[in-house]
Length: 318
Ligand code: KPL
Image 1: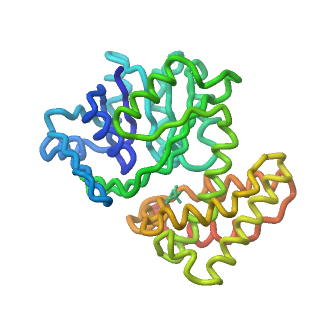
Image 2: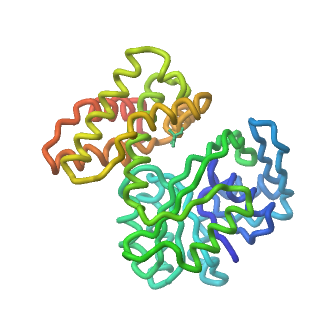
């Protein structure tokens, strides 16, 4: 099986390194030619904070290609799976044009984005593809273009999007097995929307507050005021879900607190973006909740406030 990983950020590098080590065929599409050259020269290093043996992949074993070459190179030797690990901003920005040659293709696509909105976009761009949404709690931190830290083993749930079929098909089972052989814990789920909305709520509460206060996830629990602010975001989220008929578990609030404890030393992906002056995914996380709230007439003042705070951290070049 040949896997095309699009996006060489923290998760893309982690998946690429572990899949290559387990013997899977991987081609890694990077944003820049410089990163491809660095990987070819230095190789890819994965360290683990729990003390497990580091993984090192020599440059000669890594096929890394700039994403700008995708329209030319991909049709010459297409893979069996595309794994999209780019951020929502790239998915809604430069990626649609690059995926043009795949419009008629029945390729399998695994999408690992946070937030909401990406699956609908991909359905329009790739109407013949089999689209799978994945929600992962793997912790990964990119230290450089060639080094990533596996900051906590998590779980990845995969669901088939939009076809009304069970995810237990040959292709998905093989993909899940391949990921398991690479050391990931994987579940196949027929509750794809519930899975995405659960993660959306977790991200909409934890990510903006950690980014605004510049604290690791666990520190959200360290003062009453912080927990109160989390609770406000949670209650607005629950009100939106109720108004829109989106089912969620009674345990959702406790699940959010548990994620803070389980990932207490980690920086959320939004904090990592802010610290690296990268565009955040706030539009597709809290912004998608505000869009749902507007349709349903629900007040989401706290979500609107965190969006302004996080967006206000960036001065966009004109
Ligand atoms: O998914 C995450 C993220 O940072 O985007 C959580 C679960 C909040 C872990 O940091």
